[in-house]
Length: 209
Ligand SMILES: C[S@@+](CC[C@H](N)C(=O)[O-])C[C@H]1O[C@@H](n2cnc3c(N)ncnc32)[C@H](O)[C@@H]1O
Image (tube, rainbow, N blue to C red; front, side, top):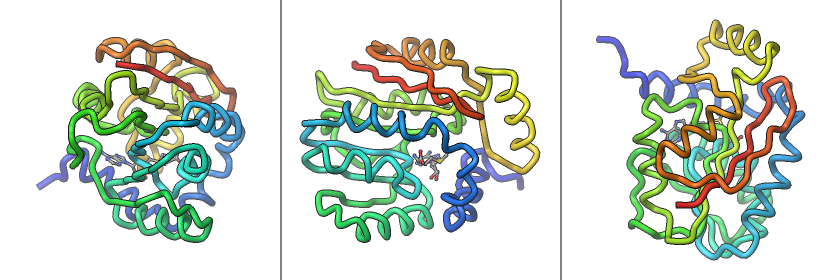
């Protein structure tokens, strides 16, 4: 029987976890600006959730700015890498957990901010994913969702087709406009949007409920 789309994605990330940081170096150009904006958005937030944290690139940038951070990913191997980084960097306010963003084991309204970096283009069911992220946001909380834009430029569209041939489990090719439109369609109010140039540009978006 064929694997469900989610299962194919998870198996891909489990396999890649140990090589993820090396294999994404060619995409690094927009990362410093993404981290700068995310750290500024995180500043002063007491209870923070990060989903799809991967190896902890964003985790390490936002942890010093917040009270408590729960950093999660659905791939066990990614959580292993994440946990190792958190320990190596001495981030004592971070707890690493395994969690699927569709099915977050936290109470409704539990977090002042939710970070979901570079994952919205990967989820098979975008509306369901955004509803799950909204559910755990407290009133006045923000969603920060910087996302690779596979359709923003000609170069990104070509590169996207090349990486698709390698088995990359992408589900949609966003432009900055279609990313903001997807958040608005999910009932979120986009409060900041910036396109950061790169081989895959990153659409940095903040939104509130
Ligand atoms: C492109 S990586 C981004 C990692 C990190 N946020 C970053 O920006 O470096 C995508 C991550 O999303 C995770 N992921 C994909 N679908 C997920 C889901 N449904 N729930 C939780 N994590 C998911 C993968 O395991 C992977 O670690």
